[in-house]
Image 1 (cartoon, helix red, strand yellow):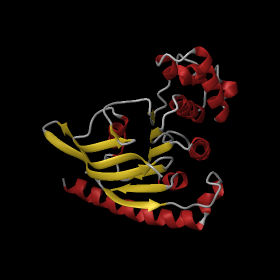
Image 2: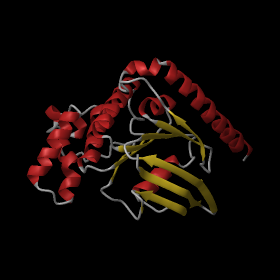
Image 3: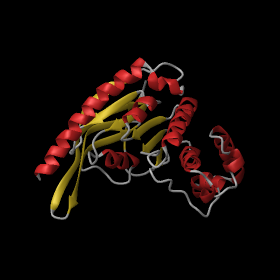
Image 4: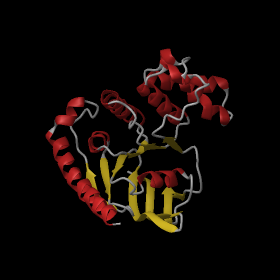
Length: 264
């Protein structure tokens, strides 16, 4: 395995009013090529901020972020981002949303069509290609957003709570769909979520952050029975054991955060 993403003692602070807030500090982590890694932890521990730094939206305050051994200097086509909000263009069809980034990069119509056809087929949206976002369910909108991120063929997918707005049944279906996509494409995925169940079901490893400033508290290897997209994997002994372990770790940090906030 080769290392795809590497964090070297990465820290980030921002100013809120007259106060400097440390979002996370001294983060060191390596994500291998083709790995699916999820990050969980208390609210405000810097998970989304870290994802934005890896995406290149802004630089960290300290340390280095490397992708393929090269420092991240800004956004790039090697990293696709999927946000919690669908972030679709409501005036464009599903196909045009998927092809938008390709068009901006000057890729010809024939190649754009070939890529969008293949991806829409993979996620089951072929017959909805000419629909508009307002005509889609929440799950379909998020499938469109994921497909748009995949269209540029990035090496890395950065996903920030992409299923948080979905109902429970749709969320589980999208998790299964994402596992299928990951197994078909073997993209390197870094996934932020507040759901411990979601993190375990999707991931090869789960990284638990401490309360703010976020640090790596624990990294848990996940070994679920194959096939990963089998919904019964959620009731396996391996799943239940992993959930108990992560639940204790996250709860410890959440209680610590609650105590600190009530004292302030």
